[in-house]
Amino acid sequence: MSNIVYIAASIDGYIATPDGGVEWLNEIPNPDQSDFGWSEFILGIDAILMGRNTFEKVLTFGDWPYQKPVFVLSAKLKKVPDELSEKAEIIKGSIEDVIAELNQRGHTHIYIDGGKLIQSFLAEDLIDELIITRIPILLGKGIPLFRELEQSQKFIHKKTEIFNDSLVKSHYDRE
Image (cartoon, rainbow, N blue to C red; front, side, top):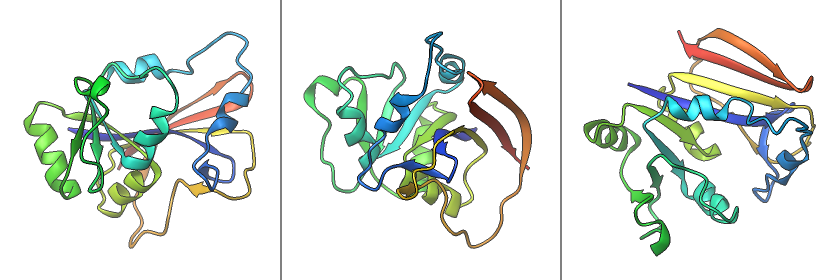
């Protein structure tokens, strides 16, 4: 069982602008139309667990980008749009209860997505792997990837890849 973060962040550690915008990610030069390892990553997970804000942002992208089951952890949302009823599901409860339920359903490699959700998982010491791609931009302000933790958490560097001579993707496993 593993809870995995796969995310892009600015050099100064922001994952979105203050209003939740991620348009700056579209400014990355990509002459070879690379997916920067996304296809390989997504093959290794069973499900995606995201927070409400991330889900609402994904809804603005147009076509639904996921082939894996998506669970939206939210106390506010009551249901997903009808056209996504077979692809996404609202789930409620504590992080521990939600993970236990997903594991019981057979989802043991879970992609954790969304700033607040990632921070909540880190606060509960429930992240097993971090895959962070640094984008060469300083946003100056926005939604940070990390917040203060009660205690330090040690990770082991697994590997680092460089894409297009500008993106630095580092993989870390929990020690």
